[in-house]
Image 1 (cartoon, rainbow, N blue to C red):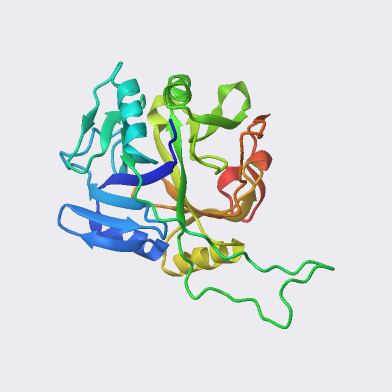
Image 2: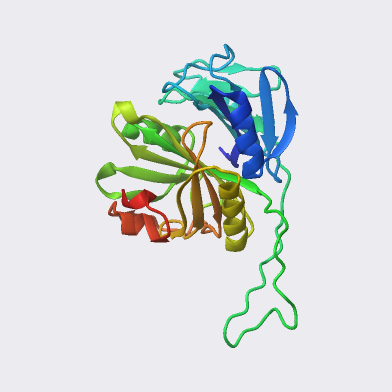
Length: 301
């Protein structure tokens, strides 16, 4: 089943105005707003939807307060959608809404959707970096972006009390591929079968009272864009969690911020691009493994 990647996230939030202001300051493009729903998008046309936490159209919340409630994954065709429907209908309720999205619940209780993709391909210009003996930018200043563009909804990280059950659901039922893991069954980095991102979802084991989203992650063009976007968000008064820095696993630059929508959000750039030749590695869970370098306190706590 060729699942391409994340198409949409829906949050149930306590304070719609604050959450909308955060998403706009973060750099997402406002699509439309109403009393019931506000929608944002990336350059690639993945969407972030805000609804009130007590919205009856949402599945029950995994935790109290503002929180991720639904994830929608994109597929290339109606045929793939039918394959997923047939597989998941074996042991759980599957429905379709008026937009043709296939809905069920995953083992953690999140609304899990699948749709024929509405994404728009984004081909980013290569960053011109001069290295010693190999100049590629000659007699030209570096071009800083006036405003960093959020290109791509890359992945989510979920705290899963029922980690093994959830891992087996995504890998055995939906064909997600293991790319890396933490030792002793602490966490699994997974990519959807139609994606080359290092991971589209990371499942991390926690106790029941810590369940919920850890963060959602969004791709920018370069480290400069990550730094500029994070600096802009701090100037707007939002709280940095940790970063900027660079991960060991996935290799990407990062900068994390606390989000009023629930959990955190991450700007990232330069993620590993994987093929079927990739061999997963098992890592010990430690701050120096999580981040090769980090200018904030978050991962050291």
